[in-house]
Length: 315
Image (cartoon, rainbow, N blue to C red; front, side, top):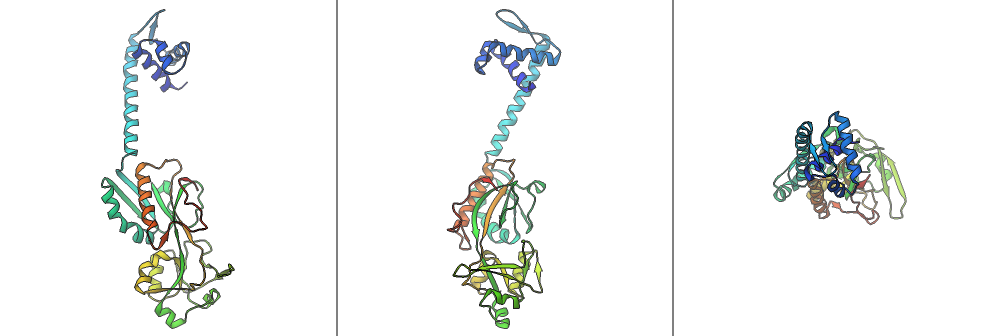
């Protein structure tokens, strides 16, 4: 039998003064409580109580053991209260992971408002275009753009990233603007190596017909920041979440092309470890950014075909 449970029973017997009171507390029987104390005595190899028909008394060993048990149980209760207080406070350090461009463009600019609302919370922001291992990195919550493949994680869908094919005006003036996806075969296409099927770009026309194009070019990179700069410099065409280039589009540095075609959107999720319930600070952090993204012109809450935004649940 669990030693901690036996200790708790023994302490309650001492503090209430009888077995029957403890039995009523635990909706048990007097004989069951007595057997638990006997089991503890057998485990310790010492007599703790001297019993009579109407009462019991502590032995010297029982007195010493009671004091130690009380200390242990008090320490455990203090730890429980402290953990619950910490988990339910909007304070401490929150370790967050996100792709580089997403963090720069959509997390960092919102942190001032977030800290104004939660001044006791600190954020340790880790930016990396690869999928960071949450356990190895000690990450509390991570933003993931794209389909989720790791079924060990828990996820919440908080938005949809629309894709676009883009190029600079200088590039299009020099090489011409493609009017059909298949024309991309004759262009410098800058490939992002962080995705599967990295050189296959998919489009859907107005009739619902799918067009998959295998592209190529002089440059490929695992960095969305490097690709963005290359596109702005006129090195080629990219196929990317549109929010990476929101400011560049509005400023006229780049232009969306093939706009008659629909590009498959990318889900935006937050994920965390399945062994952990989302603490209050995680829940408030996620809710804050979900609300922010719902008002962002470059990120929509969901598409009509997405269905309801997922709540906490297994990936």
